[in-house]
Image 1 (spheres, rainbow, N blue to C red):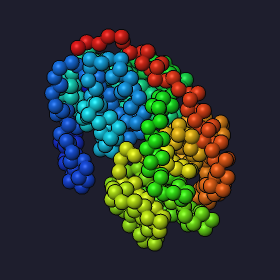
Image 2: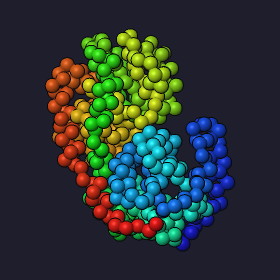
Image 3: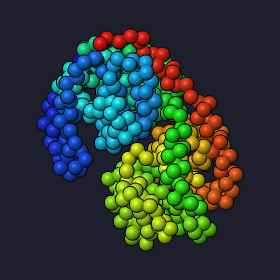
Image 4: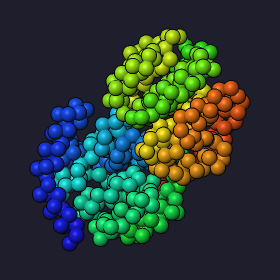
Length: 419
C-alpha cells in the first residue's frame, strides 16, 4: 500500500521530473547526453541476457571495475550493461572499460521508466553498488523475475536514521533483494534493522583493486619529463579545496621551489573556474587536455580529463585526497595506497570512515586538520623520502591484507543464469 502511494505520487510528479531534466540539460550541456535514457528509453537488448551493474557515480564505478571483470570471466556468454546516474560516472566507465561494456543512464524511479528500462534491457540479474534503494525499481525487478543484489552496501548512522523514518516503504524493497553484500558487520546490522533479510558482511570491494603494474609503468612514463621536480598530487578536489591547495603550495615552495602541484578537481566541468582562480593567484598552470609538456616555470598541472587519476598518483611523491578538507565526506584513498604512496586527507572522511580508520591505525596515512597541518605533513615527507616510502609500504600492506570481498560477494551469485 505504501509503495503504491509512493508510485502514484511519482506519477503525478512526472511532468515536473521531465521539466527538471530538460532545464538541467539546458543549463549544463553534459546532461543533454542521452537524457531520454533516464526515462527508460535505452537501446533494445538483443542476444544473450546482459548482466546489469549500476554505479551511481565515479567512486562506485571505480569500485565496480574489478567486479565487472570478474563477471565477464565467470559468465562469458553474457554481455555487461553498466548504468550510472552522473555523466562523470559515465566517463569513467568509458575510460576504464571502453568497448567491453555497454553504458546506459539509469532510469528515474518512476514506475513507467523503470519498467521500460527492464523490458528493454532484459537483464539476467542486476547488481546495485553501495546504497541505491529505489522501491519502484526493486518492485519492478521482482515482478519481471530479475534477481537483484546490493553489493558493497553501506549505511552510515546518519543515513540509517533517515531511512528508518521510511522503513514501511524501504523494508519491503530490501526484502525483495536476493542478497545484500555489506561492507561490514555494522552495515549488515543497519540493513537488517531496516527490514532486510538476506544480508552478509563480505567486506569492502574498494580493497579489491586490479593489479597495478600497468598503472605504475604509465606513471613512470608520465613522470619522466618532469625530471628532478618533486610532485604533489591533490586528487578529487571540491570548491574550497583549490584555495587551500594554493596556500599550501605557496608555503611548500619556499622550501621546495621546484615543487609541481598536480591538481585534479572531482568534476572536470569546474576546471574553467579553477583555472581562473589559479591565474588570479598569479600561478602558471598547464591544462592536461592541452597535450603540452609542463614547462619548468609552471607550478601547477590542472587535470581536466577523466580516468587518469591513478596514473597521476603513480607519478606522485606525495598524495592528498580531496572532498575531505571541506564537508563532502571524502574520497577513496586506496587507489594511492595500493600504489604505495604516502596519503594525506582532511577531517571530513565520513563516507570512508572505516577505510580511513584502518589506514590511520596501520600508520599508512595522515589526517590533517587544516591546510597548515597539511603543509607540515607534506614538508616532512618531502624532506624525509624514506619516511614517506615507509608510510606508502604500510598502505600497500593494508590493501593486500583486506582483499577478498570480491570473491565473497561473487559467492552469493548463482552458478548459471538464464540466457
